Length: 324
Image (cartoon, rainbow, N blue to C red; front, side, top):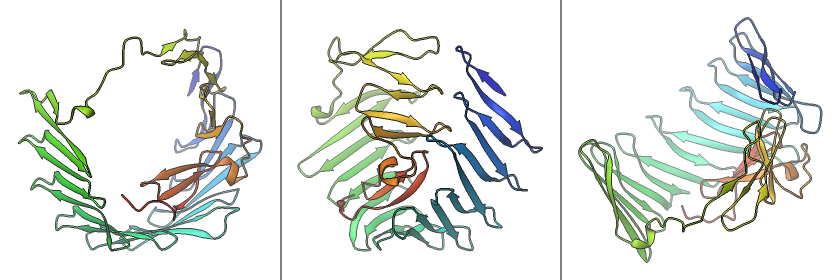
């Protein structure tokens, strides 16, 4: 299978095995991505060229139940997984070259298979409680500090949520399950959204109790202007609202690499994206210079990505706020 672009460049699959698994793939920029599989057609190795030269090889291992037990690459990054007898993941251990030790997340479950505890490498954890129907009703930090509580109606629709910082949210529905109102409250304020529907269940009106939260359309002339597209249907420049024209840049695979701002975009040969300041020197083997820090779950859980676009680590930021 091959796709040819207007400028003559092309990409496509260049080889399959006897079971129709993709063995090699050519990118539009000319890089070759290679995969191997085991007797059960599971991906075992994945090889791709480095941005800086040479190849990066990623290997995946499985247990007898077909669950992934480990993922590692030729740079020494590794993720190891364990499971209980019911096939539920009980731990995730991350090893990052250049950083000391292995960072392990662990999980606990109740008899119904609900996750009741998530523990971070430093021992900090969140506990989760459920009702008889398996619906989460409470989340607590280290077993004591309330992060959030939840309430449901007989149809298991969320009707109330209370955050540990006092914030609240209430929801009401009609008989057909359409959301009628959403009330949000916090210290010193709040807003309620009320909706009505037609007989065909189409939204017909939306009212707000606090006009400060009403949508205000942009003023006349507040638009983004684009230059004509080239033969590859790529815009070469744009003029943002209230600013001057900025140039757009693309790589040989057609990925956007620059938009005139200080943060440029880069991609691995397999088109996984990473970010870097325009002035940064990217070093694929260096975690500190080639990783972008992404935060998840209220900036508590930090995750790191290599320049090749692969997850290479993650743990909680101890200095982060404890508010949900």
